[in-house]
Length: 146
Image 1 (cartoon, rainbow, N blue to C red):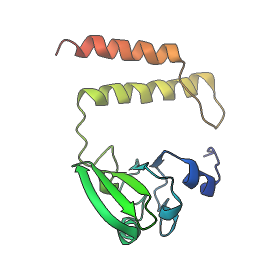
Image 2: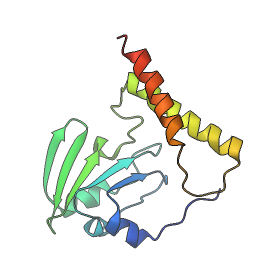
Image 3: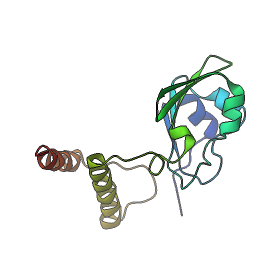
Image 4: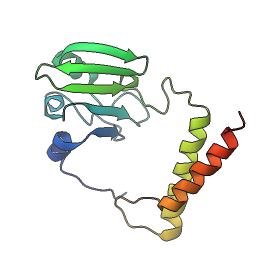
């Protein structure tokens, strides 16, 4: 499978949000120290493997559980990392989104349909803004009844 290649060091320095979906440790050891301050880390893998939580805990001088699903780690270099679901996949662990899941699954379905119908090449693509608005408006009309 082809993907979109990025320079990992640049990604670590510049990203505001990283959603790991490699199936392996995507970030480990001192790589956490390279992350941009206030970054959000989320896993979309099938298990708790994207981020080396043991290393993150060793590098942290403070951990604050902001909500049951969000923890703030302050590292020894004063950078802050927000970790979702304790590193577990956000689509499995503790996630009961109900109505929001319908919207997310519809957006995923639409993205897959667009890729297949338009025979898109590997890379980053966006849904047409008009399609996003149409999906959101239908979702709002349906769930406004509840």
